[in-house]
Amino acid sequence: MRIAVIILASLLSLSATAAELLVLNKGDATLSFVDPASGVTAKTIATGDGPHEVELSDDGRLAFVSNYGANVAGNTLSVIDVPGRVEIRRVDLGELRRPHGLSFSAGHVYFTSEASRRIARFDPAAKRVDWQFDTAQEGTHMVLAARDGTKLFASNMGSDSIGIVARDAKDEWQQTLVSVGAGPEGLDESPDGRQLWTAHSRDGHVSVIDVASAKVVHTFDAGTKRSNRLKFTRDGALVLISDLGAGELVVIDVASRTQRARLPLGLAPTGILIAPDGKEAYVAVSGANRIAVVDLGALKVSRTIETGKSPDGMAWRER
Image 1: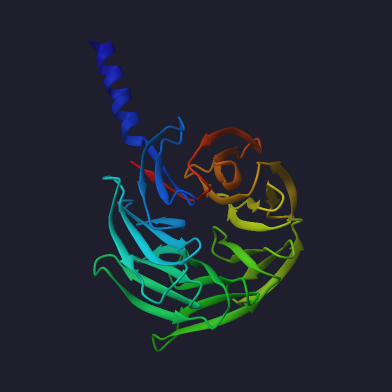
Image 2: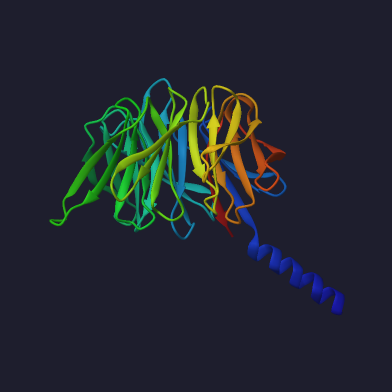
């Protein structure tokens, strides 16, 4: 009897802490629900064409997918009921074409519209886009809400700039542009909120921006052929950059801003997700139809997870 109780308690504990990895398959126009421990896909559902990024609501019950499109420019967001594993709404964005970057903040999801040079905001409760901002920059690609919720950061690949968009004293949105290197794309805020790092897709460098002054305080050569995404580890000690051109993950020591490791992953690594416990990173290897799981202590690939065609954006949900 005592053994049965122990087993039952163990199973309940496992169930309470189980996690789910959401993976977008661009080439299949699908979203997969994957067990990150076993690598088993529980279910795959359809999205719009060419899904690139996925973002969760704060409670993890809704997922938002930017349907960028493939040969034809996309203009929809998929809204997913995550526990039910079903698309509940496909939002028509009208002229807001090529939606891409996503960031959830204060009950809303912010997204970029690359073709219209805008950042926009979708209200899930009202089921409508309730705000738009014209960046006047080319290739507005990624957007990130600041940790303190006071501003947005956007990478403008075609204008070689980072836009910092915030409300002023009159509660009006204003933009400060920071000039960086060629083709900024991946970007992330440091865990302490003091710095924003962005990787330049066309010159192999990284710019370090002081958030308070909105100025570049350092630029260094990361040696990438075609950087795609950049992520801080949870402790802020390392920065990971997916080098789409070289097929590698570049690991940068934040304090010294020097290379710690360069891990071969395969053809076209793209999206990066850091696990909540900070021990592993999940990197979508788009050209090989798999995810490389990186042990952040040993700085090596510990295993791989097979996916659909051309995986990219990912999200993590604790169940």
